[in-house]
Image 1 (cartoon, helix red, strand yellow):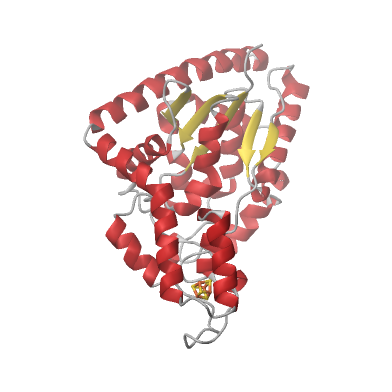
Image 2: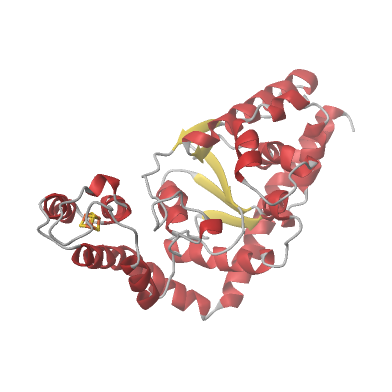
Length: 327
Ligand code: SF4
C-alpha cells in the first residue's frame, strides 16, 4: 500500500530557533518514516506580512534549508522545495479565489489575531487576507492526505476542506479533503518569559554557537521569588524550568524541581545544567550544520531537485483542475 502524503511549510523570515525545532522540525523528521512528505519553504507566505522588507528572504531560504537538513530532513525520503519555484501554486490560488466567499477568509481566527498582534505594518492587503487560501492551494495541489499542524492552525485545515468540497461540488471530484494531523507542541516561552518572538529578540537560534548560547542561557529570566540564593522558587513559573521540561531527562527535571523548591541549588547551577542538556540535543545538529555549510552548492541542488519533483506533481493536478473547470 502506498504511503499517505503530507505537506507542511515554513516561512523564510530569519534564522530558525528552538521553537521551530520542538514545534515542527523534530516532528517532520519523525513523519518521514510513515508518510510521503512534501516540505516547502513558503517564500510567498513570507511576503504576506513582510512585503516591504524582502531583502532577507533569499538568504533565509538557504539558511533555513541548511537547518532543516542539519535537523535530519532527508532529501532522499522527503521532497524539500521552494514554493515560488512551483508557480502552479499561484495559478491554483487564483482559481480558488474565484469560488471562495470573503466571509470564509474574514472569519479565520488567526487573521483577526495577527491583525492585532503584528504592529507597525499595514496588513489591510489582499495578500494577508488571502494567506489561508494560498495555504489551501499549497495543500490541495499535492492532494495531501494530511497536514501536520498545531491547535491554532486547525481552522486553516477546516477552510481547506471546505474549499475542496466547494470546488468538487462545482466542477467534479478533484480534491481529497485533507485531515489535520494534530501535533502537541510543548510549552517553550522566550528567554525572558514572554511569548517567543523575533520582535522581542528572546529566542535561541537553533544553530547558535555554543559560547553565545551559554551566555544567553545565563541571562535567562528566572522565578522572581528567588531574589536571594536561599529563597525557594517554583520551576513551573520559570522559563528555565520550562526549558528543562523540554530538553532535560527525567532525572534532571526531578533534580531541578526538588533543588529549586528547597533552595538546594542556585539559579546559575540550574542554568548550566540546562546548557548541558541543550548541548546534548543540539550539539549534533550544530556539527551537521557546519558540515552542510561547507557544501552550500549541494543544498542549492537539493532545493532545485525538490522543486522539480514538486512541480511535476503540481502540474499533473493543474491539468485535472483546468479540465474540470473547462478552461
Ligand atoms: S532554580 Fe532553576 S527553575 Fe528555579 S528559579 Fe532558578 S533557574 Fe528557575
